Image (spheres, rainbow, N blue to C red):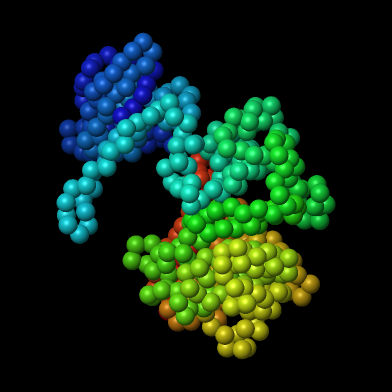
Length: 439
């Protein structure tokens, strides 16, 4: 189903042509007697002055064919500026029904969803993906992908965190005021260089409503995490890793790819650069015994409070303070091994003993140091948000390091950032994560 402000001349017709790619667009050419033509059936469902709702059936499966054919016949889709459509809050092309074959029974399954082109697409996306009873911490606005270039807003329970490189604009403030269920909103000015900055300069400041407590809890997939607006640049939780934390909770990486063979019970997990121990907490909730390693005592103590917040005794788990490379070497000397190791380093870090770590350059060294601690058939989770590393380069770097250690990859699964961090040409992906089972 599509919505257009163009004039549809015929109530029903079929468009047939050959599509030729030119850069990011496709162009329609006269159909070939032989060859792979694109065929689209159109039928006007409703029409009023200045607007028409049109049913479109893609008989063939060519890229962009509905968009190209609609534009070619004088009714470009609303929001499809690439093909001449008027600007809109979304691309008004909607799959009203999808038919799939059940993988076991073979029965046809039909899924239907009526289009609502007037709904706010940003809110509709979050509502479709997140269960508010289980999760009240997520990205509400992700820059240009959500129609607000340079602006990010996170929902943290009944509070909001707004972030941009500039002061809050009047339009942004009005939008925050319009959101329901908000007790208070904070704004943080983003700095390109935060190392060495005064914590007071990078801290979030209250701009609307009542102040948050010094510490408060949010929910993510039923797990509680402590949040604070009073710790400089750090809140206590990286929302873009929510789906990966959930994989620990449910012992499911991907179809046919469990994290642990049967359950996490009796398994050991090592979380390097643990921060406030979010991965460790979810693995512990699933039954694993965890070891969390970080250079900051403050964040490890924060992690212990997260354990206690969820009814877990921190004393049953290890929290190791110090440099990751030093501890990896010490654990290897003690012949410690783990069923799962998490590598999620900051893009840049520095320790007195081992100097500077840059993810773009030093990730192979980190993988090489971790592999001796990974049991046979164990799981390695490698992640980075280093902008200079393309996904293919990152995965190749990890796999090359594993091969150099004479280990073999049995299974791999690449994970992009979650849907509340939507990707677009103007807001490209930054988070890169790969799960690997290693022989």
